[in-house]
Image 1 (cartoon, rainbow, N blue to C red):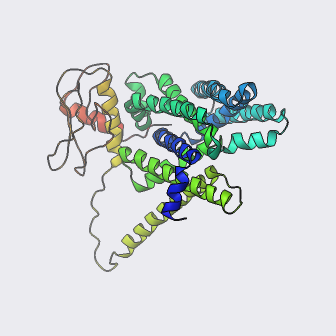
Image 2: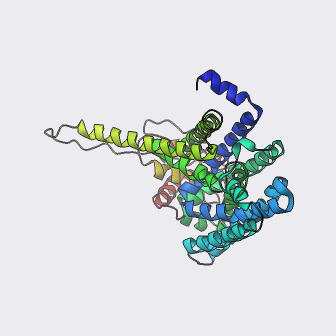
Image 3: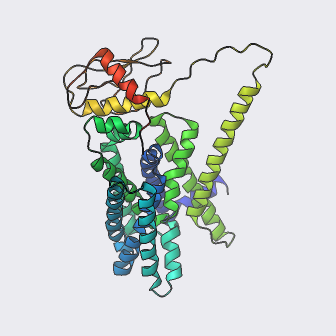
Length: 394
């Protein structure tokens, strides 16, 4: 199809509506998928995806498509709280997810199988029907996606701190249960929004694959989300165009959501292959006869981001008083991530690069203990980097 043909396709009302919904879900899924990836919660997200399914079925049985959101929201909140509580009661995380996943999905299948013609209804609930979204559902999907994004925006710095330094998060006095429930609720909300359009199973790929591909491109926290969102929106646009062309011109029934997921996987494989080729060419270019020089010390971006997350959360939690804190690079430049209310403590970056954890009120290693007031200078430096060396446990 030519660019003019593609423009005409998206000028159709139902295609424009589908692209809008797909773009909104893609951006929200990229924001939430960042923390799913950082905390290794992919299997938990799978459990939440399946826990929403019976709610979708009950809502559809009670009041048709208009009630699907209500039923899905109720099931999503129950699933999010259940998974979090089971995990905290020392039930193995995988075991808890498996119990919720299998039981809730089985309930949904039993309920939908009681209706005549359930096969087509089950297929639509599982794999979505992006081209046939009724106009009245667009507002509901946008509202639910916005609620999920709002949770992430409000808790951004605390979610980062929890992801990079779980022990430091607990030692600082933050209660882990509310933040875990909030993050799982955000995941459940985006599953609710995506299930009606993209499908209950396909939405999981939008949460996981784009962020995984983006992390192959960069390790900077602030860049992962926009790259993942761009990949997801592009894949959905490709899925819509290809699905429309196959259905109209080739008389082949193809789900746009399935095409979008395949496109995302293709993006992932291409990016991974390019990275492998780049490393192969770099290693091949080294002369085997020349005496190897010691490699330059690579910047530990993860350590810097962990320190930034810790400093941001601590400074925002109650340290008040003195000026701005920044990250001093090797050439003397200061980070622009000023910390209102934290002590004037600085952390020197190993390669001069400043952290971009992007949290308001936080810089790498800047910040005082949340419950005790501002610390200064070397104490803040030691605290941030000692805590930054340990990975936060999921």
